[in-house]
Amino acid sequence: MSTTSEQLECLIIGSGPAGYTAAIYAARADMKPVVYAGMQPGGQLTITTDVENYPGYPDGITGPEMMENFRKQAERLGADVRYGMVTSVDFSGKPPYKVIVDENKEITAETVIISTGASAKWLGIPSETKLNGYGVSACAVCDGFFFRGKDVAIVGAGDTACEEATYLAKICNKVYMLVRRDEFRASKAMQHRVLNTKNIEVLFNTETDEILGENKVEGVRVLNNKTNEKKEYAIQGFFVAIGHQPNTEIFKPYIDMDETGYIKTIPGSSRTNIEGVFACGDAQDKIYRQAVTAAGSGCMAALDAERYLGAKHAPTE
Ligand code: NDP
Image (tube, rainbow, N blue to C red; front, top):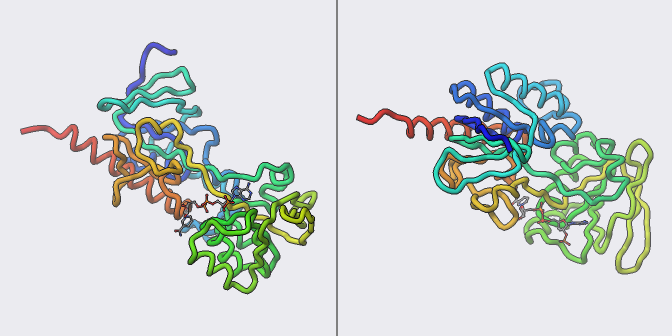
């Protein structure tokens, strides 16, 4: 452990659209933000291909390129973007808070913006990894467009899967929905929407045995876990919608979260239950999860942090 502790006005943890947007605003407000980029600098967008729904890019842009632009913009304005993982925090007591980076560097920060994002859950089969980005996706809203008029499959039975299946049904020719039990987990309203959509075929008691194809998705082999029968379907896209895991584990001892680990913010703000700690992006949003909404909430977090510091350091009469 290093003995000297660096003191920051504003620490931003995570480098997706939320973190970089917070950095842009915090830098312009002269808060000298330091961003720790985390395990996957640029976040979830770096594993998507083309982004066509982010305003301002009429011809679309690749996810990695867009995040590179976010980073450059934040750095040009004065943000200090560093490689490294925040491995623990101590939000007990009053700010400044002690934070440990890469298990050995200690820093203290007057404000902390949490933008650690979420990670899609995956099935964990080898063909899924092999074909990720080549027809396998965990985001129908991001990638559905590329399967216009094609046949696709989607795994999952929660609200996300139902929402994404109905979204895909509008674009694709046919959607097979692979549900591992004999019932949905989703709300009744979402189930009805799926069951009343003509080109969605729900396959209950069905697990993914293998996604087929060498360089791109060409089909899926499924297993009926009641009959043990295997069957193949020709598809060009395979979507996984079995939930997301917010990357919030290290904050659990201090920050109020829902039962699945999403950070609770005070409505209409990015404030958490801890003074001087703000949250934005997918770490606190399980509903929208879009780059543009994450970026918007990153802006909110920086503005909230700036106002917090302003009020704290305001001269008294
Ligand atoms: P959920 O955890 O609710 O559902 C995950 C689904 O994936 C379950 O049906 C589960 O099956 C299935 N699943 C998990 N692992 C596997 C696996 N290995 N193989 C096959 N299937 C698997 O996640 P969601 O992302 O759907 O929703 C998260 C939260 O967000 C929920 O609270 C939801 O209500 C909310 N939400 C609300 C929306 C809205 O209000 N518009 C939109 C989207 C989400 P099983 O049921 O068998 O466990």
